[in-house]
Length: 273
Image (cartoon, rainbow, N blue to C red; front, side, top):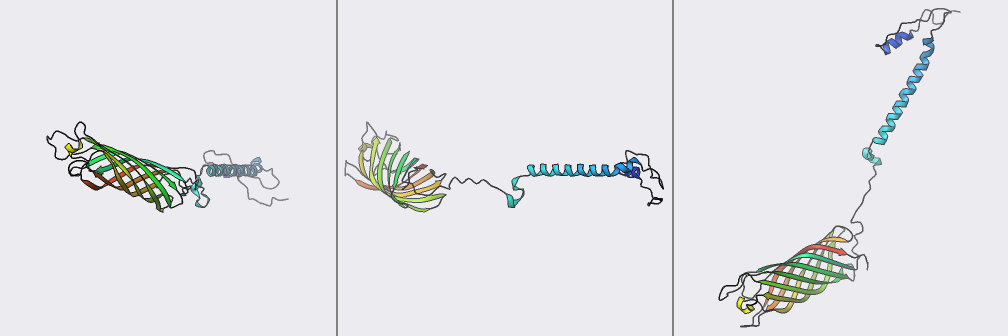
């Protein structure tokens, strides 16, 4: 029986020579007729199958490695984020809060003193809330600093110390607010204690108010910036109204309106209304 391929031969080594030009092999041709088939012809399907398996395994390994190394954000549809919002639990439903700040206040130490005094100190404030928008607030403030003096004879006193303590309470109102911050308003009524540290000179000699306790009214509010559900950064600008007098000479009583501000932190307690 004749070879169905006729005189057509299958050159395996020529194929290998083309694939691997650096490693030349002698060419064997399948003989015509009933001649034996070269063992290289029989090994060709095995080599091709093994090569395909190796290529497939390599591609699979590369794909798995690329999948494990690729970030989650490579596909917008499958991106997963762990969101932590420190302001998520800000609800303005606390019963108590307290704040402490560094305070500044401008004051006139006497009715005829032209130079004002810039005082520094502390502002401690606490609130009790009846509802979300209404509460009662109390404050205690201490200020100290130096002041200019009035006409002094002889003019030997320079920059004596003065101090003031204010205690007041009144209604507080929660205005516009969200989880980021809030605006609050208050009107506080109480007393102010003025003390002129001029010893051995008297208040009359430096034209100061005499040491006394006088009425005081605080009108202002807070600007709150929430840092968490409990902690708040607070700025408190106020107008402070005092009515001091003198117990010497013509006994002048004068109403003074001066600016005060404090900057500090507030803490909201966990107890809710």
